[in-house]
Length: 173
Image (cartoon, rainbow, N blue to C red; front, side, top):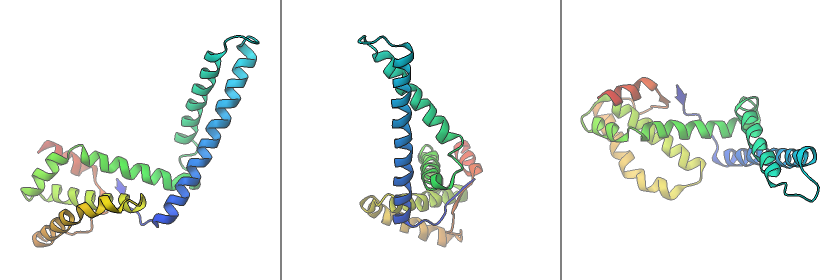
């Protein structure tokens, strides 16, 4: 179950830039090292060694992805980027069934209403973290109307968690 966490947008952007830089430098170093090593071991002096260079870069990509998804994933310096990735994945899982969510919300289905509220809260946070105020401004009316509907129906407007059961319920309806 994914839960929204309070984040300072400026700090979030600073930390994600730092982790991106670390990963980019790691990839470049691996790609150059592996390409040079492949040419040195398998290449021919003065010959066409493009395939060995490409192979080294490709291997560098694979190792970088394995490191990020493996031991780096739980590291504190990568935590903001991981949270941002999980937030966007959670929002995408709702977006994939949005037609059913909106239909359910219009039919006063409490699960769809809660799911749409989580989506609005998550989208608002994503826009804040990405410093995308123009996209957020376009949603204000829709979010306010949905919040008013929730209050009128007596549904709690604080929906900081994405319950996978909500997605399953909306998919089946």
